Length: 207
Image 1 (cartoon, rainbow, N blue to C red):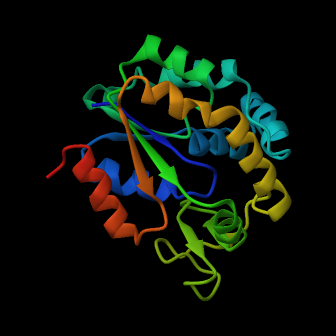
Image 2 (image 1 turned 45 degrees about the vertical axis):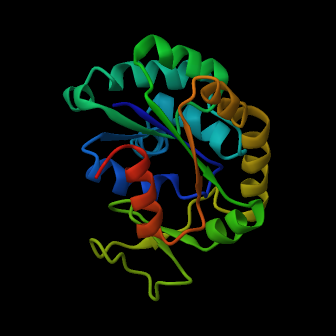
């Protein structure tokens, strides 16, 4: 089973995808993590991606698609994948259809103001990438590995609002694209995390 997660930046796709992928035995593929890895490693792709990300814009389709084609060739993708952050445009979705069949689309729904509040409160471990919130976590140490927590350069209100606008303009049409295929499940992304994960797993047929 191949699953796509949709939802505006800050809707909790990464957190939810990690939980659901483990429960459903799917390979969690996060384009955001892949791109941040390229940026951290100082690659040419990373430098190109950073120039777009810092402005709150989408990385060009060809860059992402080429990266995903290679990712789908890895062994862990053979048993099914959960895509987090891809596709982001209808063009990407059409290209994805050439690589694999998408069986389910999970659409996370949350208000823009809630997202802004979430993102500006977000802190990420510089070592392992675990996400924390200043609202629920005290101190500057990761609860997972003890690494230092940092604020991503693009986790500020101005960039978040621009990313939400870009999402509404370019990514939201994907809901219609997958709705026509009859595979969309809408999810209230303000539910408690475990309750939301259980709801999604049930929708995907996981008992």
